[in-house]
Image (tube, rainbow, N blue to C red; front, side, top):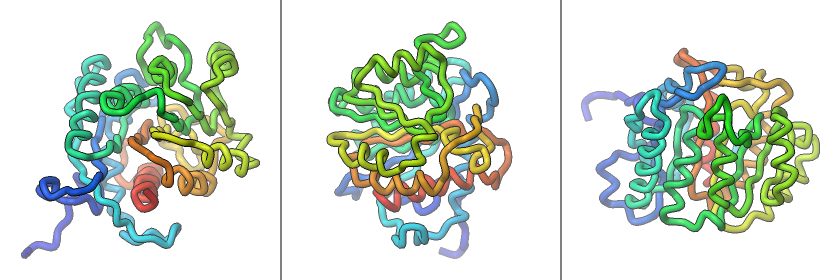
Length: 292
């Protein structure tokens, strides 16, 4: 090759797409979902896939935090051609795209975009897996369990209620510190929902024990607002008293050893290349791919 170049339009260290035909093991497929049409506070997460990919080139392949090289096979397949303003049609595209990834022997990594994309992603996985065996791990400042938000049943604020409608085995919410009373009551009355607030992270061992006990397929969803705004200021709905990056890393080491079948990270909201929040999100994905 004559030119020493790189492509910031894909996540760093991803394999070339022509290698897909030689794939003889399960790998991961990255899809951007640049959709934020139900955002209710800070919009802008439709730009996040581009910012995350560009930020990924700030890291070495060797992951110093975990003393491990990134060797996981993954492919960046670009962005889904979403329909801005049309959540229903966009959700159908996400569901179909995730199912198509599975046909290529790829597990999905979705770069949001807003949190509403989690519901169709899990629906896409349910075409192959039994959703009733799933544990949903949701890192989020908010419960997102209200039945309707601003008159809509499908939005970023109702996404985990719609996921609950799919009857997964369990929804584990970590880092919560904001909800309506309706959501809080719903969580307390449904035994298949378990919540650890950000204050519960003071005793991280209890949360570790909960994660270690998980059996069966896992879907991991990370809303950027789970982190304290001092770590992650560029997010759609920042809430004070969030969790620390170091605590998250400790939990990710456990989660990565589980049967993770899908992963999304959502609600990064920025317009600036090199935004520290975008770099942090890229690092989370790098860490996940290193540990998995």
